[in-house]
Length: 372
Image (cartoon, rainbow, N blue to C red; front, side, top):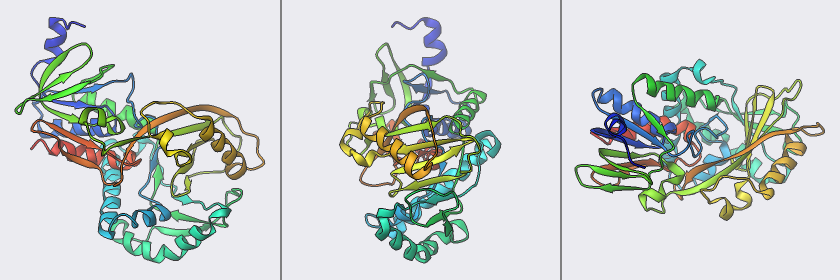
């Protein structure tokens, strides 16, 4: 594709900052750059018609880590590392709420509940006994111990008789959040160009060349915010793609369930969306197959989601599936995000570990600050 004079002059000449990826991280990075450098020329490139990856495909959990997740993290990280990561998640959610407003993203603080299947008695007991310890770790962050126990008030099937509730976790509307972020960009005169796949970034020390299938252009600095797809540009195996499969039911009359829920150390998660149930997860059934950048569903995971939906979440209640989809996350051996210079003119903010809603706005801000 040859760019016309008008196209090149209007969008691709004299570009100061180019952000690759129009998800939560990318847009927050661009907004932060515009706040710091109001006279700069900023461009966001997005390969999809909508933000790809997970930013428009996630479950909308404003979460910081369940009891079992934090205990699992403590097996691979120090106490300080875990506390700092939870602090980042909390700070990220607060920044997102301040930037857009709770009404715009439909933020609701209903708490988050961890369920334990009947076959997970040992884990259930371990988490119950750890509540005082975990609350001690978390109290400096939230101003109180956030973990409490609750009875099985929603009558879920085949689970232990108590939930472990995180009182400070909430939920939001992913679609409204992303539309608000896009509108924020447009109001600041930051263009988002969709349908542009960045195939390569060539660093030239004091500038970089962006190469796409149809054209190339020069920019002073590049910020890679493609998370699960980042290894293609960064030539790095420190960010692995992780596909998450999701389904949502048709409307259910008089649905009493309200809040966010998860089990199996966060590998399964569900919530109400008005009078529907969104349910996702199950990549732990086949880690190798779900380490992919290809969108889609598998019978193995979708069938298990349906079984759990009908036996645990909505036992003895007829339910129909309205829609299925998948998103691509970025994960690694460590849960801390990678926010660093890749070269003199190229920076990255990736590996959000399935916590993009909580971490994305803060990672975007810290990514932009690398331009100093």
